[in-house]
Length: 297
Image 1 (cartoon, one colour):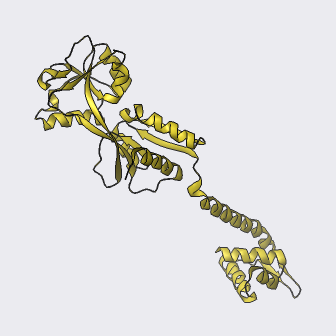
Image 2: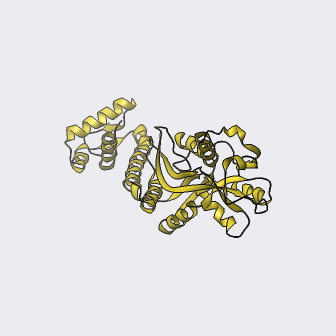
């Protein structure tokens, strides 16, 4: 069954004539007759009673007519929807972000996007970079903001900004502004959960410096950034965090920032998308906003 057969059937039913239906469709009468014959053969039932004066629907044909009209209406609606699909930036966008970008660059991006497309709403999921990558690979979300570069052909990453990690502590502990690594490792640590890009960056830097990460005395493992800062503020231990995030606390004296001597803790924030999936128009619009904002290639 194809659309030409259905269109022929509807027009023959409308005009009660093969010749009039043929003229309306700009087809020959034999072509219309062939479409109807093929349709009747496929359905296994007679749709018309043919007389010398006119063509009338059989009871089966009359029953099929409403379905045939619905089929063409559905086709036309689908064509109309798809013709406007790329311009239809609306609905709900699921966006996943690791902790640092969720607390730094994401709010301003959402503000700019909302001004451009106020009809779009968001589901914002904050989780570790590892979990976000899994969700992108499984097509559970379209776009992620993460703190590590992914080596997986299923994911494409675009560098947005560079970020510095620093040591944060309570001012009462009186850690120097620049501390050597051996002295730092004597302190109790409050760390993000495994899978966090911040934690991985720190552990990788230690490894490159010849220090086994198992030497870190992790007394508290916390999966919430604000809780980490509160624990640090109370003097429960030291931690490692983004300088962009910590400045909100250090500027009012709640925590102290320190750097580790001879140890670089630079990392980048990335926009991650699936390399195997075409973005929806709404997700593509958000991607283009990031592309313009951060001059992505």
